[in-house]
Image (cartoon, rainbow over all chains, first blue to last red; front, side, top):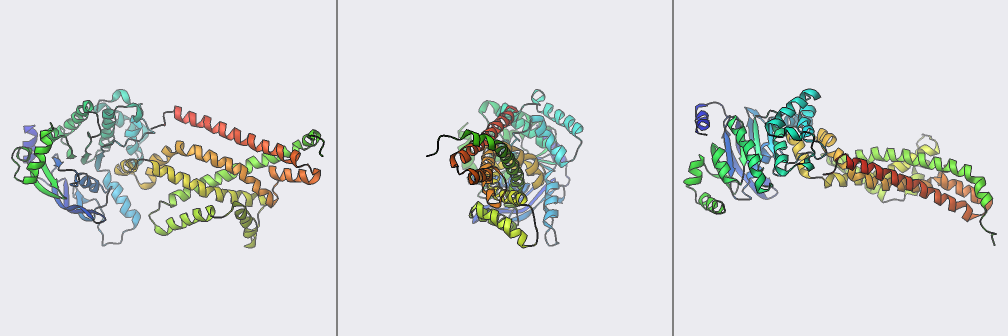
Length: 268
Length: 223
């Protein structure tokens, strides 16, 4: 772990992700009120905060499942959204977004696997439909990826035949196989039975060690503390505290952070 | 007093009834095909990002649902030639029934799409699929099983509704019954066998689609 973090410090290079002045409102409700973030390649960023603080909204705006009200998101220097001002047709705008979304892998709380496809077909789908990779090659890659998440024996199972932990690992494989530059994890263990959480966290830990850039929204505080290089505490739509896990968890300066951590850590 | 059931009359008319039944089956089947295409297209148009397209599509549905099918058939049959296009009665009939049924089917498809978890669209879009790819590959295959029962019901309605086409002198089942009555003046012998034939046709449709449902379910298509 320590090695990982020091490796990160040495990489004084361009950020993988830049989030500039991100705002999101739903009607009158302001959920995000100006988020600024830079995430370096290989960095794991943990996002914590009380419910309703906008944690998931950051991830959902990140790949434009929710269109930001204001602000800009760049991945590896490329903006998610085509610059306005120029005349852009609706389809050109959408095509660019579709292309940019292939660079972002998202894993959801409720898996969202395609129930009419087997595990293998779920993982192949993006390669074949989006990346237009030949079916047999896609299948090879998908098998490799499912093997990596420990599901080599479940290729032909339908999601309904898998446990929650297995389904979530298929979902991770489905996102990874697209070779994204960033992975977003949106409370991916919250819908799991407690005994199934570990198998999913193990896959994520592995991924972090291999150097994947990750944004992590989670209630698993111990896990976040362990694998995140940096943590932001989100409160009412703004980043109210930011720093290394040791600092946030053991020496928070912000009163709200302290109160929040006291509440969640007591439960353990 | 009629002296009992006139069997010889019914037997004499069996060949006509058979031809009428065949006409009823193929006309309602072609109408269903048209209705399925129309229903799918309209349900997708109702989800369009263009306001005007959405409004036109839902106006079509409201218009069809708000007027009697009989008048829709007459409107197509007499209205289209008014614009200088002539077509055989059965073409007008199929188009009218298809347009009518398409409105109902579009509602079924829309309802089924709305019943799916929003996460399905999000997962598909999130991996870079376009809207139409997500529809084709992820959403539409999942509603297949949901819409089969209501569409079977709609097919039954079409078979029954095709009896309205007797008013534009298409020789389907009901028309055969009318002709039989006109010749024999025996309403029971004219209409009872025909009602029975409608029932048998619909019964076969219901049975065969429920087999299809079972096969789909066996393939593991259920969530």
